[in-house]
View 1: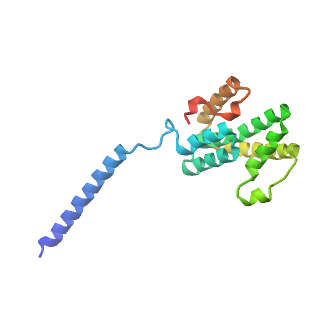
View 2: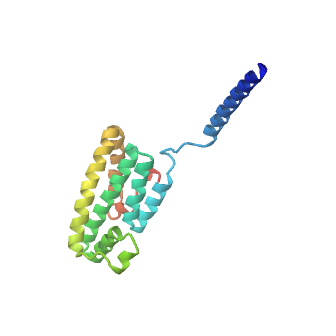
View 3: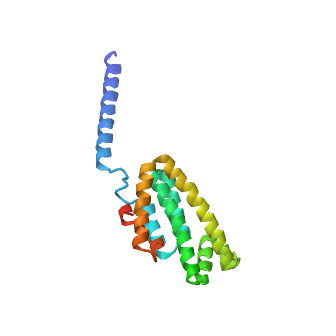
Length: 181
């Protein structure tokens, strides 16, 4: 009778060691998410930017912040806000107010009921509303990123500044290649 409890404890200890071994093997076999590998949200955000679907680009980067909060994810979200601002400025300078209206609808339309009751607003007013909002949000997320890691934030901003200089007419439709989305 005395041997049974000892045998049970030995079996439990063996199972515990086996569990640790399996967990260790699993951890080495499944790579952790890395900033060198683009995550799904960022891959989608890159496609949304290229398509001009800024609402979905913002949402994808917001999900990235929620699932993997970091200085990088906050900078990426800030960049999307600034891309919207840059796109609006370019469309206004080119006198392409229909594109501004389309952007407003892209940002405002969420559900099928919006198809029968669309949010109407004049394009020039839409531009001001959107720009004011994205500029405020950009300031907030940039400050959050800087609080997390100022050196990394500065490095990422240097990369995006170079990207903007290299692509002055359409920087808002993509991201710096160094970001590896």
